[in-house]
Image: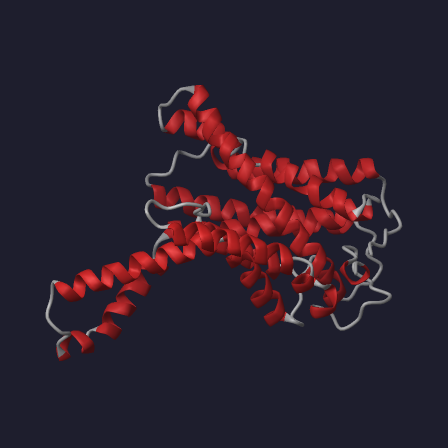
Length: 314
């Protein structure tokens, strides 16, 4: 049963605050070239590193800005962090359950990856002799080399660390408490918050249009597909944040979705993939509310002091 919170700020202030956070996030990303007039980065690596710094600055400023609007009465750091869903209690539940729930949407993709991996192993085994002792000994070294290559890839840091962390901080941790504090109903917040999230991706239209030398119509179609995906994911991430009260819940879902990409629904001559996808969706719908029940993520369910109201929504 949903319990509405008493409005602490006006709805107008809450919406204007969210719009400002969206503009701030995007503006700081382009500040080095448009405002500071710095020369363009010499490489893609330098470009991404500059973006990392800008995203970190915008996230920190967003946390400070929202803290001034929210009437947080307690000066204790733990209470302030809990407003943003930054908590240490029930951390394993906040990581494991949302990750399991999200993986169900990718059941078809996971089955396809397993089938392709097994086929690859069979091909390698048929075309080569049994593994030699030297090959077995080299496995740890090969693994560490592969791990080092991944850790030094700025694209990996962008997709799986910086982008998920900064976006969830700004568009979930900061905006959702603002909207709930403005008196919006919980389901309204879940559907409204991703609108701001999608607006922040409109800058991709000009980037794709200028960098890929394609027509404006093609760039618009690409961005429209991205926006549709971000809105749907935003609904899900906002739902996880409100239900669990943990920032890490939508964060792990964000990282997992970035890793998997769009879910695979059908695969050529592999009906098992479609069956797995349908079964995963059914299981996802069946577990969506039970596995995100607030009691699983919180010690108390009454007199909750958090502005997102996760303790009050049962």
